[in-house]
Image (tube, rainbow, N blue to C red):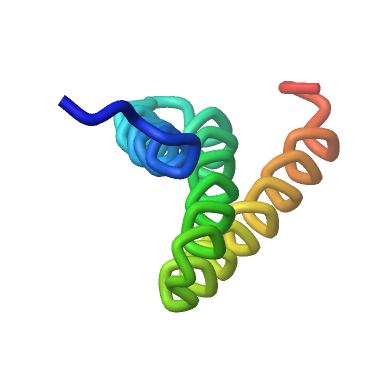
Length: 82
């Protein structure tokens, strides 16, 4: 059996993070874990010279950040949950 190289490990870690994120009930945890998975997929896509993978996950990562900012702003503006 061939040993895993660093690039493959990053790819597997990215897949695992995205899969775990989709099991979260808390939307904030989902967004954070999905963002980490996307960031790892960007690194993986660049490492294997797969720009569609890197660009698409970069876009999804930005979407996650936008939603996280909105969630945190809403949370801090609501005196009941803050």
